[in-house]
Image (cartoon, rainbow, N blue to C red):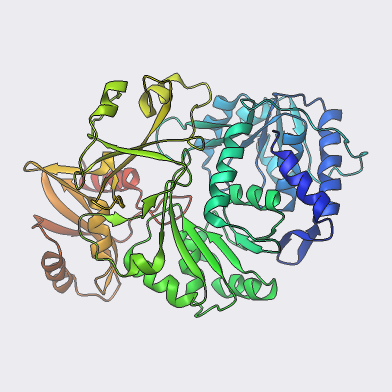
Length: 500
């Protein structure tokens, strides 16, 4: 079924309910559906046909979803780029997608004249084109028709375009709904674009957080918390950075449910969140671009756990199959699926299920690198994450496989080290690396903290003995959620400073 139909059904059932609210602006489902259908008529008028790819470079807003839903209605494919994307990455994504049309605010359209990959796109579309007669039909999309292209978050190399078909989005919606369990009348604040589509399908009101995606640290937590209270938000679905940022203002008691994922949430974070949202069920969701959700854990359970060999992310959801395979830096075959690790053994997490992405756009190598096809034709996804299952079936994360450190016959997890270091007063963040073939802690401290004293505390808290501690002014974070250390940038920083 065309994913547009979920939205249209909600609009018919609840025309007077607010569909989207932002700071100072809102729109009801009935008016919103009419505007979407007018936008769809505008797309047809401009020559957009089923299967055409439309580059959408619009911030999270009412206008963004008018365009995306209209693209779905006419059977075209929305190519979605994040606000934080760099110019280099933007150009690469344009080359991969091969779009027929481009839509963006007028300021960006002016800048786009100086970007050859966008300037060469044949059709340019404006926003707020709602003076057309509403389109009264919906393209009968087939299950495997591509609805959406999004790009994985890797900051180096060629981006992978995740091909989300209508069937995949429907399955992902079902899986998320099963975990979120939305209720009629929920008011949901989020900074996660895909969650908005789920809200439209369930008739929930979406409140877009005033969150600065390009500069997340500059977001105002008092303003966000104020909107939660004034809009009557009872459900928060957000990145860990945003959820923790909101917690800085103190207790917010009108939230009933909080879901956070997209970055690590350690036990001390879980304690912070449950204290800030005392009346809410707080759930931590583990997943990725290609598989969301994989597992969930209640924050109160996580807060009671000690971080040792891995970070507990709960038991896998019912809709997913999961295996732990040996860590191999190269393609895996169907035979590899029979080599599952036993409880407690670290390996790579691989998953399969209807809501697990099965294809990339025009990238056979990405398929070979990230997928395994079993004897029955089922496609398994290599998450690239290291972890293990315990005897009770709980999943524990150890970080990215490519960042794991093998030394003296044992695996060491920078991810786990980061969780241990963050508990030490005076340390902002830190990680484990191999520098000059030696285990080295690289850390960022508070301005006034004593480096020698902190170094001794680090040696005391870790279950192994690193060779040294290296202090740097700032560890780079990932651009999307601002919660993970950007290891690739860190390596460049360290080796450029050392002259290597």
